[in-house]
Image 1 (cartoon, rainbow, N blue to C red):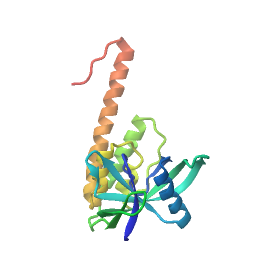
Image 2 (cartoon, rainbow, N blue to C red):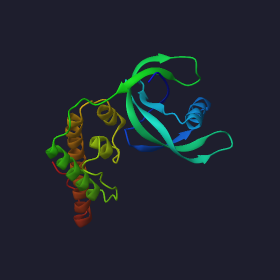
Image 3 (spheres, helix red, strand yellow):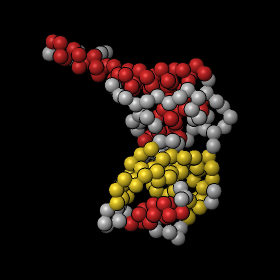
Image 4 (cartoon, one colour):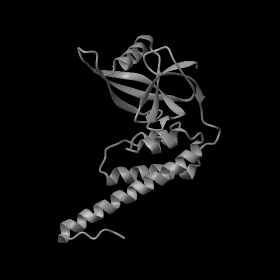
Length: 204
């Protein structure tokens, strides 16, 4: 992997995750156009006031849902392999950089953590009354497949993205899902109390 066109965004794309994007800036219209024409991925990297993050995700356009006469478009992108940003380069209207592959180390998740992650997934889906489908137990990089099905902050998703151990990543994801499930449960309890007697007694 040599030079890669980048799309800096205020979001994080996880491997296997699919997200919608609205392409309106001419330079990124050019980037997406080249990606579609050449059948090549581009890079999505999280960017905020602190700048570009070091680890990003290769993205491919899986669907163009709408095209506008002025060149804008609505697309769906899917996350692929991760990369590490080495050095920004120049010469194109859009951001480019020299990158290298970023892969997991040989540190698979424990079976008990896999079971716990899937159980928390099911509990959270039930609490939120969501019809999201759980991934299979033997899904490669299960942590990404689970995380991509829930709304997590960009900072937390970047933390997962930059972790090279599936074992560590899944343990961390279990922590996040447990916190989210507890928060939803408390919200439901508060709502139930409010409906029953008109008074809200937040849990201590």
